[in-house]
Image (cartoon, rainbow, N blue to C red):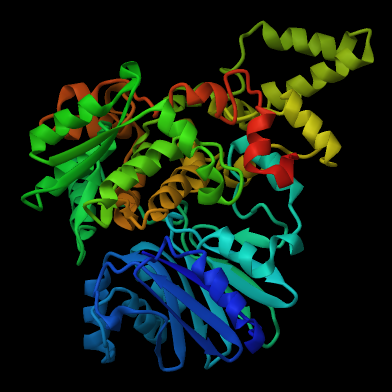
Length: 586
């Protein structure tokens, strides 16, 4: 795990500015830093050493006129390395997974390489033979990658803060539609960022930038819809799913530094720990507890740790810690981000970093195996008939057609089109966030020139697949939006802030393909959320863990003063002003 930064159009007198931008990523790569300049490019890398700790593993790497920097890990690198040696006589100088990407690109090209690689990564390649820069992000969006297009040049980085430093925030223009989108989703949706000329590269995409023509081309190389089905049926699904999860966990244990595990007390992290306990004799697990015992999951985590024989470590998260660390949300995320569970996540990362450099997490299990409670409502959400009581529509239609006041008729017409007939609006309300009716949001939009016709839910519409069954449609929406923009972003920044690498077995390509091939009735076996996982691990994990109600991490008293929204969907202006005064005013 590392941090990368680079740009075209290098001028020698500005190289210190390039170094300064790279060093904003020191937390991502505290072990060392190196850079190369080639043909007017700056290629910088901050290293967190995980595989091949020797100098041979440092970056930028180069071979045959191709230069590479990458943040992430490639889990199937051993098999790919062997194939490159046997079939292409590739000459490796290190034992690192990164060098496999370099030789893989040289011998296979970018599309075939990305098709064969399984891992988490954000990479940059400069091919001096054709004078092109290639940026690519992993299939699930586990690792972040930002890029900027300004003054005829391309720049890129693992985090927004490096591009802020490179360009200078005074030279950047805030994208007010991105701020408005934040009020809807509680994150800035990809590909937008806080600034107009800086973007996030979407998961499963690569882009190519031609230094000669300065043309940029973006290509999608992976999608859920494009997956080849794994043959699953009632006779074999138990064996196939268990094998896929176990294989992903085993593959992601490879490391030259100590590896640990987040153990929340929920199903997904418990399964990852259980499967790891079948591979290694002693594992270290880490939990963050809650000072409010009514929402504390730590006892369930201890229960699992005892059952699998883990060396378990825990820490209690209190409102005092929350209030102290809340201002760090700005430094972690660089742009508005509304999930304050980032604070306890950062605390468990600190706890783990005292003993290990890598942890495995259970993220992705909810989206793939159907764990969120709103999936129970998918039929109602996506079926306009089932979603509305029979007597409501006739009244709305009558008001629309016969109301004496034009304003009432107009509101009835909008309610019919948006609420009764628009499944995406119903989805947005089921998901939560700050709705269009919120007074502060509407006031802010008016003052900042956001049109009343602006589509609040464009991001959901962009990734919606109406051809899927309701529950699978809901899971697909979460996978393509909330998972990488909120869940994975939260964990990446909270962990990399302390130089900790987090790996996600449920999001290996094989795990995803297997889960997505599972018939819906088996996925929700016995009508249960994650019914298939509960069934498969009944003998392995405590029933108290498998069948208890799902809950998120409640931050306690800070919820009343520091959350970016509350049950009435009001945005506390003082909090937004505190974190982002340049956006919401001092």
